[in-house]
Image 1: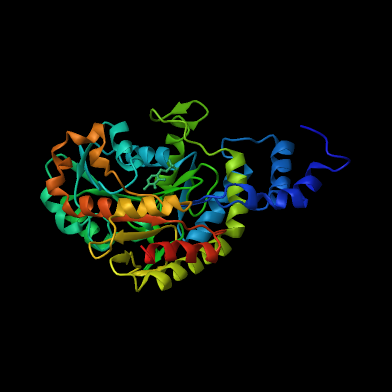
Image 2: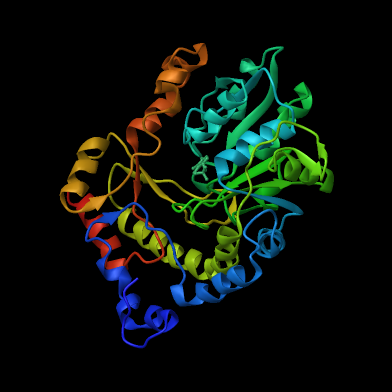
Length: 392
Ligand SMILES: *Cc1c(COP(=O)(O)O)cnc(C)c1O
């Protein structure tokens, strides 16, 4: 690294040259931009890691982050992971899920890939038009003697109908896992939405509301489950000479855990900044015919992770034309979730992937557009995006 006068690294990091980093990243406005704390605040954490030489395997930051997250999220037990996908794969292992699992086609592929990694057959069920989450009314018809669990997603941080899903699970003796990758910090009418089902899984990927660069976690209701999950993420080791299962290496290292501790100090401000953007879009788009902004029915504290709109027939352009219009003006939204998981080659051939059985999901995937939202997004830019949509 080149020397820069007599400044220490910490001084250079704190200097204005580094502080202006935001302005120069890119002129384009992307759907999201990772939230980062000021680099100068992270240096003492790095020094601590270098001094202790505790790099991984449940070091002090790992311990600290698990405790801090339990408190912030209002959950009892949490196990940190290197990423959310490994956490879903391990959650399925912890509950010893086999056979068939009912899940949603309207999600990121990691949800159903986790089933395939466990040799489980996904059975896709359509979503509810209001929330775009698994529709409980359609689950029962998909249950067979091989069904062992329901893997649902709190899509865009909107809670699933957890009561209805639990009722079906109790009736048919099924486990319930929630992919809560979008739902960090979300409070439903009964507190944290992470306290439902048998296990919930979080992602701390760079693009999520709360990030540790890469990272994830499993929320579990009791100490026994947590202990087994902690063994499973460490090759199955339950002691120096005891291996209880063919576990994986899913551990979060100290670098990510330290960053997580620091990020947590900024999370409330970050969510508050997102709230202003969400409010502004809603205000600006409410009179635009044919644009439906997804609401927050039943959510006491949203996290404003995404700003999904549905481009309906009353709008002059279709979704793809609106996407192109925004891109031509330097705005890069994202069509998630398009294509549906069921349209990818490894799922297409399953009977439950037939689009005829998934009309709501198919329709949403053709109409959805997620607009840019992230803490550093200027309200002027939000206005510009809204004007481009309103003036088509
Ligand atoms: C991001 C995401 C995941 C995967 O999380 P990673 O941490 O990237 O492995 C899983 N499910 C959903 C719905 C996601 O959005």
